[in-house]
Image (tube, rainbow over the protein chains, first blue to last red):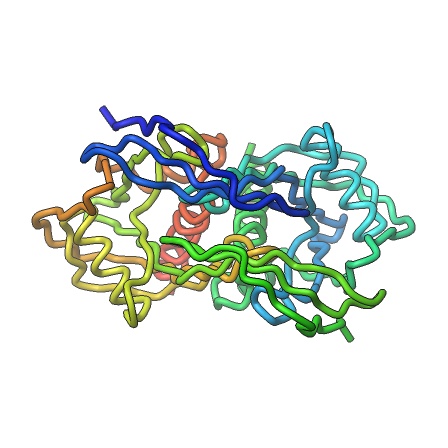
Length: 181
Length: 181
């Protein structure tokens, strides 16, 4: 039996634009302890694959890392959207594409130790091109990478974004299993 | 050319036990904006595989999600440890195992949008059993899962921890490529 940590008291530390921070005093095996917890709305991630097996990717500047990061399209939940709605909206806004087929692959907790964030990961295909619609603060460059090359880039340590690593490797595994059915 | 966001000013919001929070005013394409940034020491993640192809996993209660999560062993950097030192220490503390061979697979940014955190991911094998040494606040249950079953659990959406998804899928791909060389 694993010990469940019950909240004794909870302190609001910060309420922000993309995250809140609270500090919970909790029961632990040895008595009491504290947990720092990020509250986050969660979002969706899209592994969008063209008919010739290219993956749609985006490059953007990530301030926390002070560098440009190569990622798959993704974004935060707006209001009451469900995962698929977030995925379809973000795919269209960031890349212009609409997906004829969209398949939920999994849910990912990027940092379960200190954040509530959950990301729904989708495979999107039968892509129809259209106009992009970036958020005012997003400066995004779109590119296409052959899916097999994206897998190689992960294995060489060249793709480091966690949600992109999971999405690319799951899309590969999903398509292999599908072609073997 | 992707726009680099320069810091105009930086506000310290919180300094805590496992993370700090700051809010940077930055230059963006359209003028100025704010970025909420988690500072985190980073750490290491270990895909430890036994001689009979079982993966060593741990179950622990994750307060942010209010549930028990199945993960691979991992932990935060202590002081000036390098990634391999973190990996070897955490593997021993959480599972008792010492690895005869340890291979750096990649670095993972779990949440590049709002956190500096970087995790070094390792494959560990030639495992020698020993005594565990949990942190006082850790209540951990250890289990072994066949590597192929762990992959199936990811594909069925039953393993949701991001670092575990990346580690399991990369270990599988690494071992397949190795056996084909």
